[in-house]
Length: 188
Image (tube, rainbow, N blue to C red; front, side, top):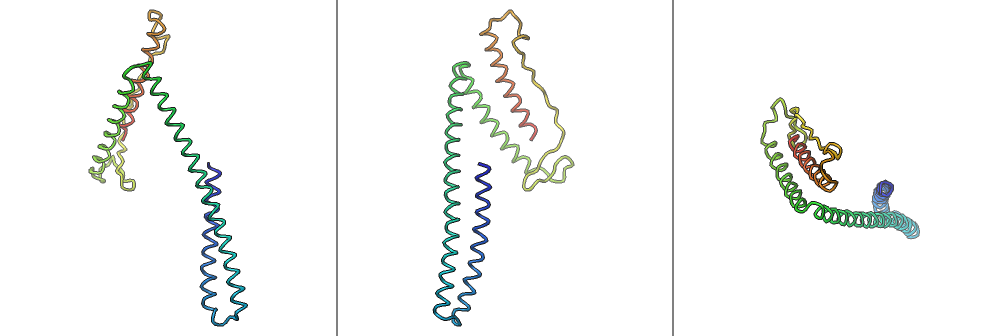
């Protein structure tokens, strides 16, 4: 994709340069038209037409590349949606109700981030712990980060069975991810 985007950018520069030159040459032809003979004007007109067709070929190449990039992105998006659905299904089988909790936390997280952004915009830009970045006010107050430790199977001990230990570990991992998500949100 990176290579195709670079190719698209290069074609765009070529197209813009050709069209600017065609615009200038067309104006010169129009200004000089009364002084040119019929054969000279026809020759210059065909020359401009040929250069215009070259620019059109470049534009068509740009269209083909963008169509290709769009199809690649659509395929990738379909794969991501399929993988997400499969992951949710597996998670729901292993931990019933966990998907709903994660989605609820995620929606709360989005709401919290939105509310923090609104509150941040109302803060004074002159505060010593805030900096203006474009239209956003960013709080640069140092935050204490809490690290959540998740016990592994050895730490759980031999008293629990493998399935109980796996369930406890999966639940602790999910809880750890949620707490990390909320600690990241508090960093805003």
